[in-house]
Image 1 (cartoon, rainbow, N blue to C red):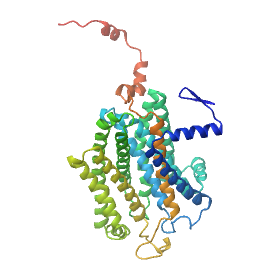
Image 2 (image 1 turned 90 degrees about the horizontal axis):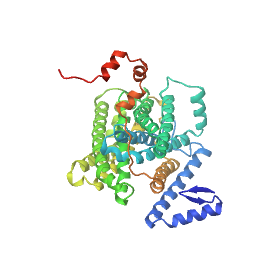
Image 3 (image 1 turned 60 degrees about the vertical axis):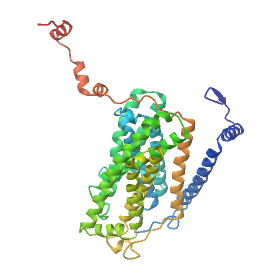
Image 4 (image 1 turned 90 degrees about the vertical axis):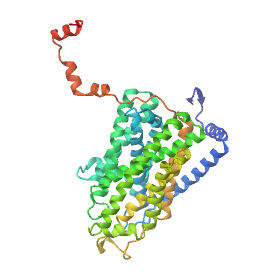
Length: 441
């Protein structure tokens, strides 16, 4: 027997089953339908995961010798950068103490943990034997490898996020301050290391270059902000905890950050298109042609540019659509645009291999079609995040609390200069001058 909310709850199977049935019966009909749909999608994703992990092989995944990274890698990248974007958006309130961004604190932390755990789950399914990676990274470190640094940074990131969530609900102010600051810093380093994994591949000209990490960080900021926009729309629509503060402060703050993210990503995508179109680097021009006029042109111009960038910008710029509903539409389209952008990015880097040794079986472009297993795993991952966040909204206090921002005094208290100054003896004449009242001459 355990004690929950001042009530003794038995742990027997029948008692737990009765408690679950009673709780489910108390749900409203729309909520029961929503949870039922998510449960069905999670079961489909679990079936795909079991098929991929316990029965590995080429028939389960759509990847080939040419397309070694498929939809599961795309899903991992999407959820990983979304985690960083959530922390970057909320850090303006949790770290810098800006009042209009303070309502983003608790919900961002829950969504960030769920997104990162889901990203780890997807990459574990793709690797089939993730335990080997863990032991290899610990016992055989490779500091010269960006992929090794990516694993280390994201592992540290998860620990920091868990510490932030624990200290947030436990009320440990100092620990929460440090965790929020560490999470904000890691939110920049983590997607940058992930972008470096792609950027150092000279054999893939579309990925290679110094601009890949900045584009990954900008896409992370846009994706995380858009996810907060979707979450806060339902907070406003369903009148959840702190919905007044979320409507008056949270949604306008998200709209402002969304505009910044859309503009920055548009500039970086435009630079990428121009560099690929006018540059004569072998491999880059062919990949850019595949994106602009080839098999990836429809998802790029329709899904990435029009629906993912231009329409959200119009919804934010037009005064008539600067509403919670308009912000929700812009956020949903922006999330879809980031997902399409990650699909195009991963596919464009592999669609025009440089040599025949890489396994080209069709000309002029290599082919890749996601398998039902990959689609099921990705759909189940989205359903898992939605299910866990729905339950968190119902059973956790995600309302706005006092955000303890980092202050200059707190930083000085931790600095070695502060400790050195306080440890030095104060001369007697300085103490006397400090205690003597000043006289006007």
